[in-house]
Image (tube, rainbow, N blue to C red; front, side, top):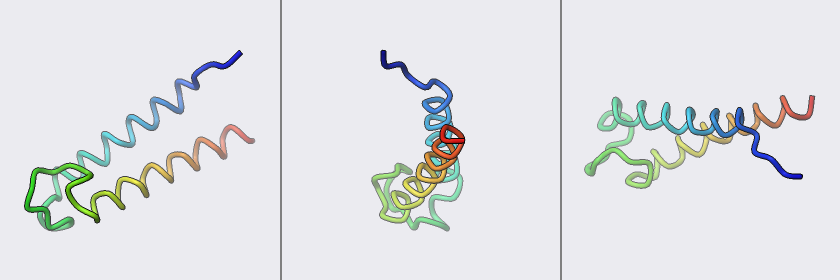
Length: 66
């Protein structure tokens, strides 16, 4: 039987929200965005979000395999 790992889902959602908060606060100086702050509106913002989600995924994977 398959089930959802709620801790992993919650960590992913929290990571995405944290990334969005950082993007919103540092939109002009870090990402040079001329549009509204969203992770698909800038290549740098997209790379930043993917990097944070990869780190969170690695943390979950390391914890699950231990």
